[in-house]
Length: 198
Image (cartoon, rainbow, N blue to C red):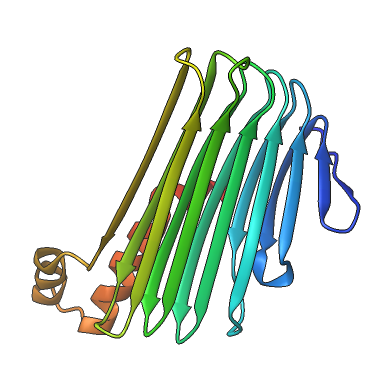
């Protein structure tokens, strides 16, 4: 796979293929322009103990495709993430899947997909999933679609909840401690999308 990455003060122009991992704690704004027929697979994380507040902007030209994945474990910190995906060209595709696990932490996800009136045959999906490990945690989600024609396939979804009590009970009945069972379920939650991108 050829990899081309041009960086100009947190602006990325991708004209072939790119697969990379990015620590969002290092940036306030990330701008990606995916050129015609180019592909990008981007995995985001927030390493360290500092709060992060990041906006990710993506523009897709004709027949461009982009995969955006993120997994964030917030322990006593805040992660605010905003994504803005604009389909500038027809037949472009984008998948977003951002997952948060909060333990005495807070997460906020605001995602927007925009398809202009003259852009057709696009496909775009946005998914945000959140697990709260205690009553001191919070998660906020605001997925939004701005679709201006009918010749597209676009979806969005969000979930906020706790770990499944039946799964916790099962693992503890097999000899795992509560902390070990929690870690196993959190890893499974992350594993669903991230294994091939880590």
